[in-house]
Image 1: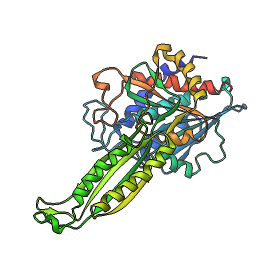
Image 2: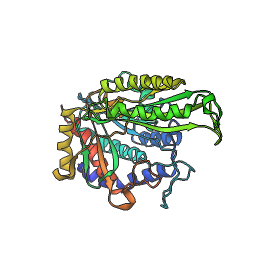
Image 3: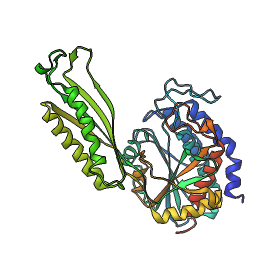
Image 4: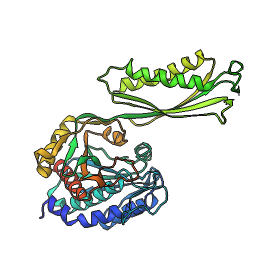
Length: 391
């Protein structure tokens, strides 16, 4: 029987081909119908009976070795972003205004190759694997949609594992941390209403722009002056819209923003304070407030024992020096909801080998060094196989 590394190498050309095919045909959140069809066809080719359309466009397939053992859930996200691609590569997006700018095309390709490797090694393993291909991670709604649609009905999961390709990490490395690894993500909209009128007569108006501007500044104190500096949190106002002309004070302005936290209690407290401070600030300036809060996903929290176990696996794949401590990430990921089902580990595989692959995630020139796909397949397949070799 070939080693997992040898299997990953043998499958590398196909892994790259799948990734490039998906990259050419990006589909954004809950529109991943073609992507779903590609996944389903490959899983059926491997002899599995996938459930498609779970949570809209998700796919779930269970592989059972037939021997008693743990149930391992392995997840890949599959959605693209509404970003116009600027790279001039052979596999660039063919869909205007959409591209895989975060590596999810690679995640799907990797997990499909991992499925093939695990199935081929069934005689050496015990238990079963639940392969989850999840839509709509970029809007942090896909995991919840799949779970609400019964993705795990009748399935008791013992371990969860997943990966993210990373342009922040050098090719040939893997980064992971125990405990909170990625932030909880919430967003909000605040509409400040005053009384419009002529800009030359502000005393006859109630100016929502001034109230909104003071609100932006007041909200900054919630992290800088009300939150412990070691309790990492971010509150950003990312949109401020109001007015139509230079000589008109508008009736209202609209602000949008996001809150990122690691600690659940901090998340609850800051949500309450955002709304309290907003209400008080605009009231002081004679305006009124309408607010909407959009609860995102909880923090990604890795189980300490699972991380320790995976570190040993990763060291065998990339060497001890290649296993790095992942810094906490203020970005969010609804992998958090899968990790809430059982102890698990979410890790990052480096794909940065130079200027062409150093662009930030979500940038219009984002790309990965495809040699990292083979490493990712090896890491994820080795992680799954290790969990299925006994607890």
